[in-house]
Length: 440
Image 1 (cartoon, one colour):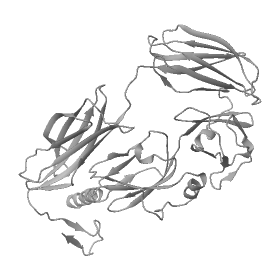
Image 2 (cartoon, one colour; image 1 turned 90 degrees about the horizontal axis):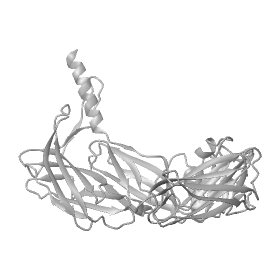
Image 3 (cartoon, helix red, strand yellow; image 1 turned 45 degrees about the vertical axis):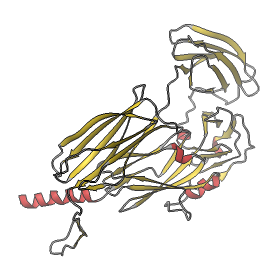
Image 4 (tube, helix red, strand yellow; image 1 turned 120 degrees about the horizontal axis):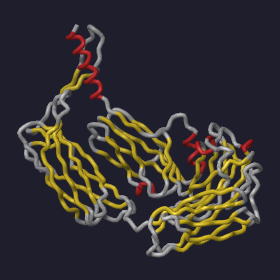
């Protein structure tokens, strides 16, 4: 009985090791400068992601969105991104530079055993949504420039989207709740597509009937803060036009820095500019807005300039090395807009995994620090070459501000010029059935 239990556990272990797995979203949305991430597990031959750009229009998106099963588009891939061996669970990232154009993409994940697909929408449009009474109000703006965006058409319905009869507008858009089907809206603009579903499900009549926008959420000392606010009646949804609105700005130390009274225009909105200075207190500023008996609070942040986040890409020439072949590692670090990371250090950590499935210990083979020149470092890895080794290389790049970003690669070493690979056609067989295998 004990032997049977051991055999059963061994078969489970073998089967779990034998098959790879890719975890990715069926649908995804990317905003400016965002990269796309997915997970891979036990993919010894690596994963290739083929990127297909479908087109910029809403119809391009809906054609793919309505498919029961995504499939490979009938065209050549615009980009192919290869990720090397993923031995354990590994987060893989496609940089934002691969998604320069707004519109619809289909991502095809190709591994040794399977193919998977993701429908990805890249957009530069964002918006605010407020549900008041029997209507929903939407305000759209460009995520990069902060300017108002004029929509070209709006469709509603998740299963079978249909157009709404609303005149194109760059102002506040009102939509009757009774016209919205399946709590879903698709908004097409020249700057991209906005897909609203969860926001509509979460809409609540008790939400604060104030839309407050600044041209940026983060400012440097000396910048001008350009702000605007739109007010609605929480019971009727009516725009509060020609009303006195009191605005006060308080710094992080509780000191009142600005106070004034503005009158709302025909759209129920006000706008104002607040000037900051180089010696102003850094931190979160509170905007206190009083209209009638209601008071709302909004915030923006004042901070010194910090370089944006960066990505790290580590790569080897191949997944398996033999005899005295040089093992050259290349590490590249770039900011999201493409410029190389300067004044950074590469912390290299090389470990060996045990060949025993039940042994989770590891052995440190190398640990060194190297400077990056123009965002690049090339390192010749040194490992003992006396036996087979499964090796993990963790590359951590630390920039001058102390931020750490890492990437991990794997390779195998064999002390010879050939390796025998034996695989069974099945890992679980009924009693009495013949096992078939292959040696290469």
